[in-house]
Length: 228
Image 1 (cartoon, rainbow, N blue to C red):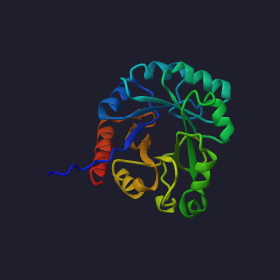
Image 2: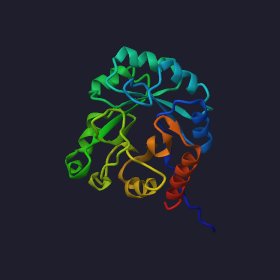
Image 3: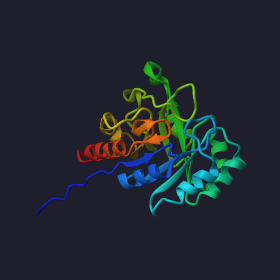
């Protein structure tokens, strides 16, 4: 009898989209989720109205994600209501209760970003406790701690992460087609599931995506998946 080999599938979010052609390229390339930055200080920021227009291009089963940084709860809820099917991503200093209130007390799923120090200081970040504190989050997004909010395109040392975390994890921070496979191989078994999130690693310049890099990134993820 021929055995059937299960192939793990890492889900892919492409973040910081600002143009219609980039949304289309991400979808065509195989993205599972598309991120829109609603943080005015970011070079990739879009308005709620712009995010809604871009999200309207998405086909079924591709999820829009709205990134907030220390946004007022009422404004976050209004933005989520304006983009049907949207998931929230909180990337500032939001407490567990603030995330819960801003997500409409469970009306919308949300991701909570864990800003992990780069270098040796990353060993002191207690991800197990963080995931427990934000247990209402649908997933914990792992990003490098930089001065600016909203992601800085820098990687942290993945070896400092604990071997087991009772949460869905989303690996972010400095991912590229060249290194995403290593991240998947290192962290695949560390959580309930592993997804990846990329922005600068598939850009021609800030806020402008490169369709070729998107295809290369997705191909690298699928190549890593095939090893499991």
